[in-house]
Image (tube, helix red, strand yellow):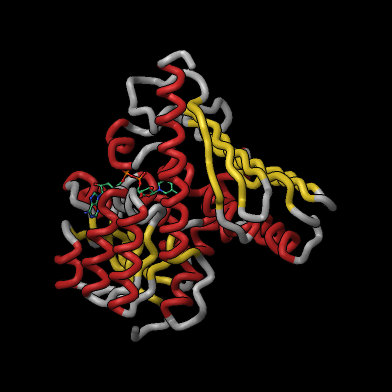
Length: 317
Ligand SMILES: NC(=O)c1ccc[n+]([C@@H]2O[C@H](COP(=O)([O-])OP(=O)(O)OC[C@H]3O[C@@H](n4cnc5c(N)ncnc54)[C@H](O)[C@@H]3O)[C@@H](O)[C@H]2O)c1
């Protein structure tokens, strides 16, 4: 790490990779080394923008070893990429969910720990100022005992079928954000979870991947959590929550309208800069491997609940 900037390579330049590319290029604390992307046409577009590209992580490590890497490849590729970079002793910020099953997140966490490198996880909500403030109000007791938390996450458009086949289904792709958010905000784990698909689904999908669903769970301290997830929303991509305590209530529409998109992008900058500081030795301010494992464990409960509900619906019970 010669210069003042932490030199970061981006792995994967799809939908989310593009958002991270914007954050990496706009930050004054990090420097973009280049982008690993297997698709030739995507690499050609990046080269036209003056960005160095590599077809594989091995080529990146051979040619321009970075200080750190940001993984935004498909979720089912996360474990192999984390293992490869950990082996090369490269600290990582990996997009959520770090694999599509808890065993994969656990293996990735162990690979990083065994190599002695940082594995931060891209749960960007931990960098939303309003949510940080809410977490502080909860932990200081301002809301009293928490009775109920309701979390809503509705995307504007359906993702591509290709994305969906690599995403692990709605409880993994979308749900993990809410599971991590609830655990982090309230500081408790989920005890159980039930759920059902909500409304019709666009094309024949596995029972665990409807277009929309509702989940109901409970945290270890007794608070009920409802989660509403949807892949089609006439508004923009939107996330909001409500929380009821014995002494207070809050409604936080933290991702709403064009301001929501600006906040999302600002949080990506905040997140990667916090990662850079952790690479330099500061305490990690984001989620880490065990958080990814915990969220994927809850996602497995959700997938099971959605499958069971579909079975009951099919049998008319
Ligand atoms: N934090 C968030 O809000 C958020 C939002 C969307 C997606 N994501 C996560 O980001 C990740 C990527 O999602 P996406 O929507 O960008 O998917 P995508 O399919 O649009 O893009 C993935 C890109 O990775 C490339 N790729 C495939 N294998 C690779 C490899 N071995 N090495 C490097 N690149 C590889 C693909 O060619 C593609 O360009 C997923 O894990 C997803 O869960 C997070």
